[in-house]
Length: 229
Image 1: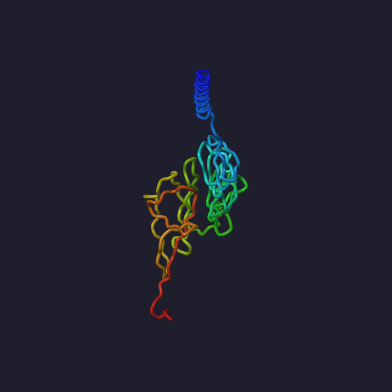
Image 2: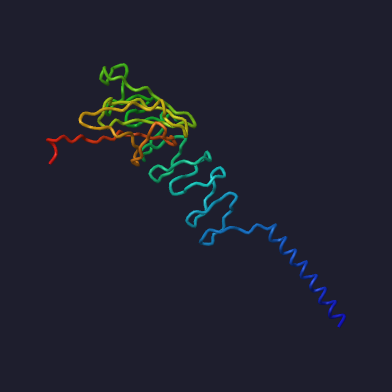
């Protein structure tokens, strides 16, 4: 009887030590995380979206449907669903364009890059030539602007309004246009409703600029009494 009690006591001690070892093992051993479909990923360097593991971008999680991580380990918004090389290309209005002279972003609606890598204003479909004055002499071309790292390009399309050209501006990332915000254009028989991007989002003086953007003037036609049905 005494021997049986001793054996039970030893068994309990062994069980207790085994329990402690199991707890230590669980605490010290990382349990791998899984996507919903069971695939394992490393939460230190990866994240899971829609059952697919992705590598973090500079330790940051991003939205892989609309964003991508470039070779410089920075996150960029995809251009119409496509990835691109931000060192050589830029995206405006869902269209990819090659930077001028390797690093200069411009507004392709009103600017162009000549064979020598110089930015020049457009006059219709042609590039402005200051030597021959292909533009109307009374229409002064807009100055060329080139954003640096941490800055964004904001261009304006008056959409039939006057003035026909408004100089594009450069705004620091996350900052607002404020004093650079242009005066309202005018258009006969129309009311100016504001500046809107391609997603029909209105930009005010205090709107934060987070990417290169072309803002288009929105107009509402004035209906006079004699035009009403």
